[in-house]
Image 1: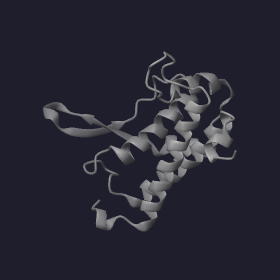
Image 2: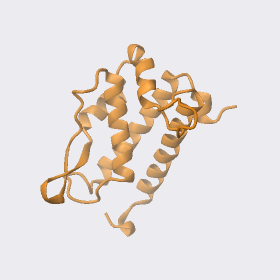
Image 3: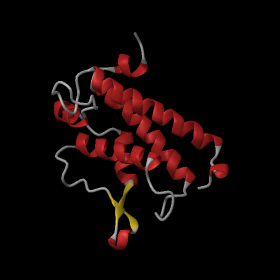
Length: 156
């Protein structure tokens, strides 16, 4: 998709998603969910710790089920340094929360880093908007699950 062909709606939705994704990762760190607790380590959000702490009380929402059904793909390296796409492998994840978190981060990665051509759905604005809206709803649900909506929404 060429920049001049990106609709105002996609631009607005993408910005909104990046804003809320960054607020969620800030909230993870602010609430002690860190990737590494060693003094001097980089302060990175601890998605795995969040998943471990909340998997037992998580149940799939309508948005989460829809995201799983939409099956965002991830870009991979093929032989000859070619790039391709494949479904996200969810069989290694031990919980619904882990699966949904993996797909949520895949949507973010595809939007920010992902290939801009080659996949069956790479240039489908309606699908892109749908994935963004589902992902934003899931971020809201995760913030409620973690009981840090105040940090997430900047309600102080």
